[in-house]
Image 1 (cartoon, helix red, strand yellow):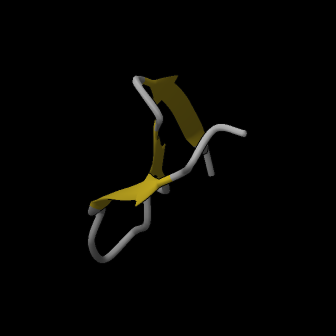
Image 2 (cartoon, one colour; image 1 turned 30 degrees about the horizontal axis):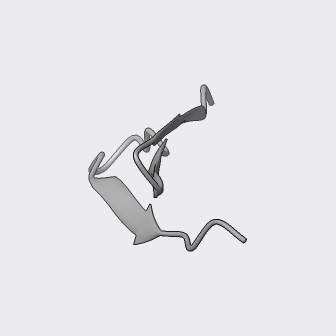
Length: 32
């Protein structure tokens, strides 16, 4: 599986492709 992670403007977007369904998930990260 190909996992993509993109960080922009304090938001970490992780995309995990699956056979059944692929939903992009957004995780908000606070920069310290």
